[in-house]
Length: 102
Image (cartoon, rainbow, N blue to C red; front, side, top):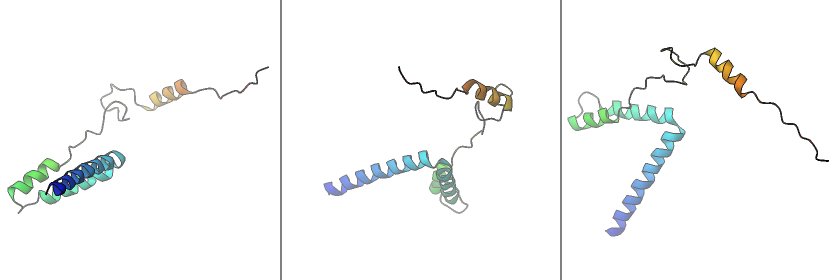
């Protein structure tokens, strides 16, 4: 019995690590999968418990904005095309020059 409990705990840890890696490496795909599972659980005719789990699993709606996203709908961020041109000019570097020591 003790060996089965140990294997179950290891399985849970490995599964949690896998979910974490998938969310980090493929965020759009994992969000779409999470949303489809949540919608499947939150259908009419399902038990109250399954519907609550589906509502809990539903990913939060992102605002899609924020400083650095490029939207500049609030007018407080410098994210327009002129800001990008300004940033490119500031980060422009000179090419490397290799010189021989005498």
